[in-house]
Image (cartoon, rainbow, N blue to C red; front, side, top):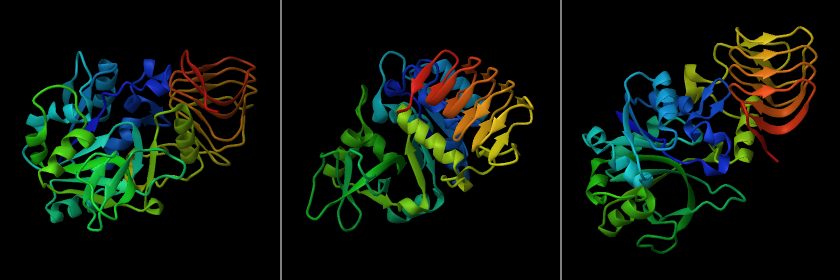
Length: 340
């Protein structure tokens, strides 16, 4: 089976970090966010992957190729094409059978095999994977009727009676029929434009509802959401089975207490760790450093002598000066972002 990971977004809410990394390439413990998307798809039986690029395309391509060998890429040069236009850009790659599309800026720990099987059994033209609406959030609703058919998306569509509101996870399973309803060129949205046209012509768009207790989903589009995901991984609140050997702690040594250390990390003997904490590949942590709770030191990062960190993610290549005290921050090679 084939799949596409949408990787062209601008990541404006995560700037300045996304001036260095596209969102799917953002470091998250042992690897980029893209690694976890790839692991989820591979576990579901996907064997061929395509991506689209626009923002920092060379960085995104290099990140993806490091995680997977064969890769099909559609580059959106002058103008970002939206989710519908992005999928259209890989039409020749995808159109021979049903395929999966996954937003590259979310962490979704889920077994997609039953979703794919249910989609194929249903005969629907497309299936949207849904969750209960997160409490306190303002995401646009996907509205279903009693048969779990989608009738409106973000207020657009044919509607109906007794509709219920659900949250879209960013994962679809599609048939090639979607290409018949796409514009020949220009930016468009798969949900608000293409699916609405399909519903109005009587094609079935189905909602596959998953219960929150069975999966983990996080939109990592803001510093606060990134930090929350980072903390939940460290505190063991994310089921890791879906990621298999690509999980964040694979190949790490477990330290005394709740922390993980890559074999190549250089941790001075005088460092004290409360944990949970993570020390990535090739990082250096100098003498006198005090590591509190919810701290990660990324690949090639350095923490200077006597620094104190609590609820901090030092991203790949990040540098913490000697003696500083940091709390609730994301630290890049030259960036510093509060997560409060």
